[in-house]
Length: 151
Length: 109
Image (cartoon, rainbow over all chains, first blue to last red; front, side, top):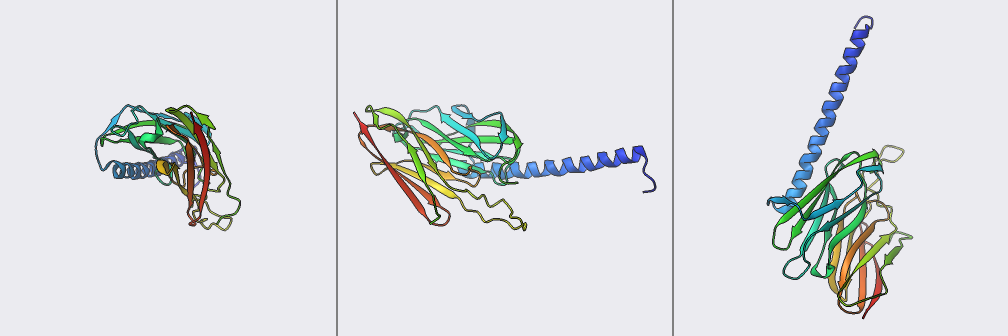
């Protein structure tokens, strides 16, 4: 390039931005694929219905190093019908796995809470495995100001 | 065994038969994710608590499979329906093979 013109500079900047956004989109898609695969391993590829699961997580997390998350599933907790497990997954972390809670009829209530790390703004997905073999889900988007995972 | 690992349990001392109680647990641990780099740019190896298992009077009540995305000093909260007096036993498993345990009794009337 000869001397810099205003138009040239703006054009180059726009190109750079386009390339940047393209790579970040690619990364996001890769993470989403991993997350889909991780969830499919848990469900054995079975259909997942919405409802019955209530995932609570702040819409805006200022500190991604410690984001409180809790989940409750609407279900009886008896030997004949109970919630076996709830898997929590993320689609914008280095790895999709967060935590899996395993309940028993003795749990009384299918409810659990923990604190997690989120590297950036992303979705958190809860999948509940019921004792009858069905699966239910809920998901929330969390805006993260400062990412966790030590990035 | 990693040094200075301390656990804390919060459970009501008494409950009525059939009551669903809240259990809160905390264990001090660095939860090194395996994603961080040191000053020289080398990855710091993963070192986490990867499991908590809880029994009541010897029967499995609750467990959690814990990934590196869980915050340091992992905090967990869950429920239990108590039908009789007894003891909750908590066992945490460390990546380095260490096992930490704690117990808490409850009187059910």
